[in-house]
Length: 181
Image (tube, rainbow, N blue to C red):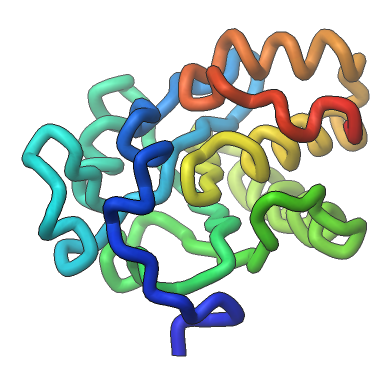
């Protein structure tokens, strides 16, 4: 079973995914980094070497930024892209099934906030980061990061959306949910 969303989409359907940079930069003053979903080997067979982005590539790109990934919050609505087994044991993995093309519901928003708060509390003595992704690392990802920063950290909504858009390069096309924040 691949989770609630068990439809096999050929990789050619991922034209948006292919056009998005794999990993954004850490959002300044936070522990968040956005990225598109990494794909395990079997799924990425039809991609060129330049297009491929695996869990191993994710870890390498984070290290290139002199950061350490401590938690991944996977917002995709399937388990087909990769599994926790594809990640180093040093990285916590949390799955939060989040329907695409819809604004996340209140239960999803609350669950995301709890995951992040728990991780931050458990890691108050270090600076490891939280990676968040949906399929393309844009809409669900941007929305939930913004909701956390606004609702929990008390940041001003408009400035938070603008800052997230400009600083988190994986979110350069983030516009879908702005009116709902």
